[in-house]
Amino acid sequence: MGRKEKTVSDEDKPRDPNEQAADATPLAAHSELPTAHCPLPTLNCLYEDHHLLIANKPAPLLTQGPPGVPSLEAMAKAYIKEKYAKPAGVYLGIPHRLDRPVSGVVCFARNTKAAQRVHAQFSERHVRKVYWALVEGTVTPETGVWDDWMRKLAEESRTERAAEGEPGAKLATLEYRVLRSMPDCTLVELAPLTGRMHQLRVQLAWRGHPVLGDAQYGSTRAFGPAAEQPRDRVIALHARRLTLTHPFTKQELTVEAPLPGHWNAILGEPVA
Image 1: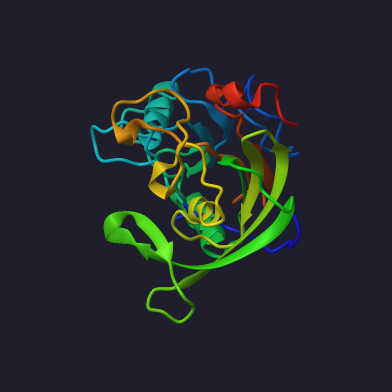
Image 2: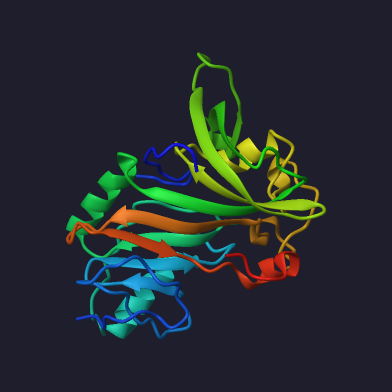
């Protein structure tokens, strides 16, 4: 997709069995630390070894939450505690996050050294993340790079347009390509080269292509399971693939997350 610059996602913040989960997408070659089987149904585990645990986050689950609030972090800790009968607390480092209504790949570190090394990769933009999104309208041209200046409004949990040089303005760069065009929506693949809050969502919306279900940024179409509370609504944005350097073997590791089942209502047949 155009430039080969290293990237970080728009949501990034600063004795195990060794076989691949039956429902996981095959990963890149990783001979010393193959993927692990994750039998517990409460956690969709995509990769596991002594140092990393990588899971497929369902929306609208929080990546991380306060005690007593359901989150992917709490599920992962419960999985490790039960699987390995750990009597004490479980350590998990969280080098990045996904927004609540977004699904897909999330990487946890299982020890402090791994956490430091993986966090450094995110901070230095050595991690590559690829997202898939279903958006309103027809995206043209079919490939391209978008550059926009934006400003985070942290107190309102949203992002707004900004002009270069304005206080708080930061440049956001995004590569994209169309995967499938449909009569009233488009499936696009997105590769952010910067890590701004809600970057993918606003760059699409500003071009007249809001993510399906993303009412915060102008979508008029419902998406996913019905939900009474706004916090329980999901949007058609999925962290499809993550590539990083393993913190100990130094081999490149790529993990891919299957799409949620409710995407099939629109896509019908699988997308390669």
